[in-house]
Length: 371
Image (cartoon, rainbow, N blue to C red; front, top):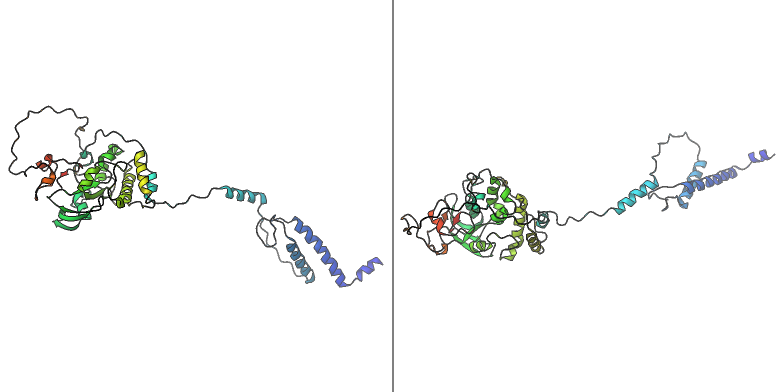
């Protein structure tokens, strides 16, 4: 009798009984389900929420009321990531330090801080000829480097032929003034080595091949036509002992020194680096100058490396008998106390070419006096 009663139950009652069973099943499944992620219906602990369970019950109820169809093969589900492994990865990423900012990337200050810092070596063995005899046409364009620089920097120039600059005007970066240049007149313009040759000698150049020293002495990156007085006051000083009077040019000047020392691998002293960084306090974003196209080994050295014994170690020359002072030869210019006293048409005088060269002091060691 009981079995018959069950068979005669109303279809709606049977359906409600099936739904009740599905609710129980869905509740059990929701209590066991765990995930990692942010899918809808997933709680912070990775457990399905009551809303998700309710939605599952609704879907199951709809399925029970829908006529059965042929089953479709299900695609294999991808395994969920292990909660423990994922948690370790997240914690490791959170603990990693943030990458440093790159605000100073490419600045002269960044390059300065990368220079080698060492003490100054002895000046023993230094001679101007160790960097080549005077100005050399390293790029073989038919003009020596001094002429190249005058042609590059002077304005309103008067040129004799291809290279010989007879006159021109210079906006001097060291003093911020205008200087008029006249060839053969009073020496007003010098070609300064931004990094002095003797400074480089004491900070690495003594061990370079001769071709590298010639390239260094004739590299436009390291050269600047300037007021002669300012250049001679600078002498062979580095940034710790001399800076241009024109403060507006100091950032560019120090950046050029850094570029030259970086290109040729010249070290700096502690005091020098401190002076450089103090200048960059006013211009921390000063860009690093381009190295230019000149290689660090000169193809044309203008002649062989000097073979004479350096002055510092040379044996003393035998004493010469002092003879009465001879009158100047007819083809020599008249001698004056200083270059500044020369009248128009006198000078400049080149070492080993003009006897008058020996009469005057070549303070910048470029092989030319009374420029």
